[in-house]
Image (cartoon, rainbow, N blue to C red):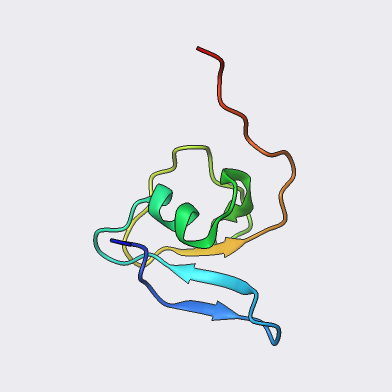
Length: 75
């Protein structure tokens, strides 16, 4: 996988807690690496990210539980 190779903190069970954005990352790469829904990423203050967020190198993202799984719009 290309991208989404930044540092991760985990709890005692190995569950990811935070991810720090590095050069070349996209939110989609991060989502794919951790196999999570869009609503499971939040900024450092705990605000959930929008479906296609703007992220910057050095941003610390937190992993949250899913509220509502995002569904594709029908064609």
